[in-house]
Length: 171
Image 1 (cartoon, helix red, strand yellow):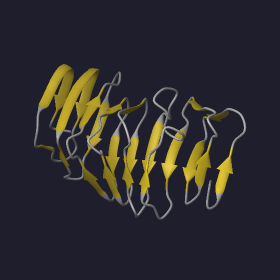
Image 2: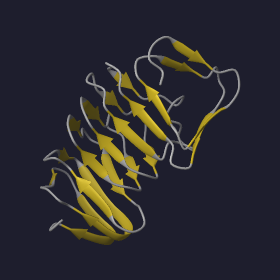
Image 3: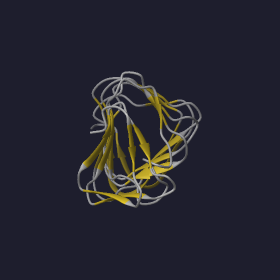
C-alpha cells in the first residue's frame, strides 16, 4: 500500500502474488523494472485521478489482475493486457483510446467506464464473465476458447467481433 509520498526503487521490483496498491503515492523506478508474477494485482484506490504509466503497468510482465477503485478515476496510458480479472469498483475508468486484453472476468460493482475509441479483447481460456453494469463499450472482440457469459445487458456502439469462442447473452 503506497498511501502518500514517493517509493523510489534502486533495483528491480517484483510483486509475487500480492497487491501493489497505489493509494495516493508515486512509484519511481528510476529506470529499473517492475514485474508481476502469479496472481499479482495492481490496484488504484487513492483519491486520484490517475493515468497509468509504464512504471506500475508495464507492457510485459504486467499484473494478472486490475482493481480500479479510485474516486478520481483511472485512464489507461497505452494498450495493455492482464491475464486475470478487472474489477471496476468506483470512479471512472477511461480507455484513453487504448485497447485492453483481458484473460479473466470484467466485473463492475461501481463507477463508470468511458470506452472512448478503445477496444476490449476477451482472450482467456475457459469461461469468462463480462458484468458490464450497463456500460457502453466502443469495440469488443471475443477471441478465446470457451464461453464469454453476459449476466447483464451489453451495449457495443462500435464493432462486436467474435473470432473464436462463444458469446452467451443468457448469462
